[in-house]
Amino acid sequence: MYSFLNIFFFIFHTVFTLFNVVGWIFPKTRKLNLITLLLTACSWFVVGIWKGIGFCYCTEWHWQVREHLGYHDQTRSYIHFLILKLTGANLDISLVETATIIVFALSLVMSVWLNVKDWKRKKDL
Image (cartoon, rainbow, N blue to C red; front, side, top):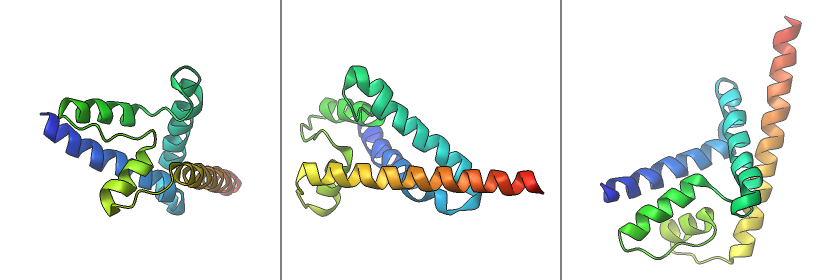
């Protein structure tokens, strides 16, 4: 079961992250993208008040699964972990975290802007 969960979290969390980054591009997925971005922001910055800024439930659960499987390779950044596992590149964690927050902020701005634009266009019809 834990091996399945490990694979599940690799796939689910990676797809969720990629959707956060590009979901705003497609008109049909913009509303859902805004929801996933806001859920991510709440996890990072609201729950993060108590559990540490940047806290992510998916990351927490994945780390628990991996610990149960005997892996102790977690970093404080899931993106850093993915880059390391997928490419073998052990980039500076501060660089990865900075790039992550910049990409997240740009994605959130684009999602809000395009969702408002779509809403205004629909309202004017």
